Length: 133
Image 1: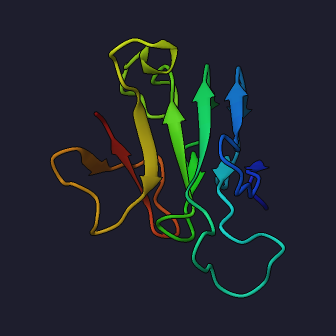
Image 2: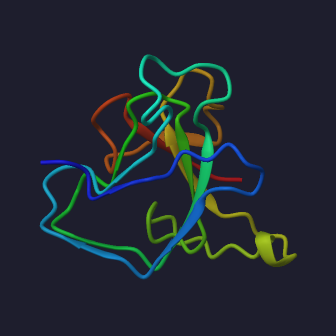
């Protein structure tokens, strides 16, 4: 089986997408996957990946593997309401407020340990971490 949604590769400023009001039911593999170099062949190179996808109103029913990161820096998911990360943080920062949402990113030794924790919602590939602040 493949991932439910493979996210776009987009190098343009402000690129990426918003996923909203999506429910995954009985999904056995990763529901979401970033794309560091889709269609380009070979390994990721400078400038590939790390693109933001915003998510809100996500539901996962019997679908434990929410995100697959093949490479630690291929994508990051900015959770606007805590529904992906289950942090319960309702962010206001993107509308001019002061509350920053949580993000799910590929696990890496470069992540600040005080702000990022490995998550059971992303265990394949490099695994994922939830970062707050």
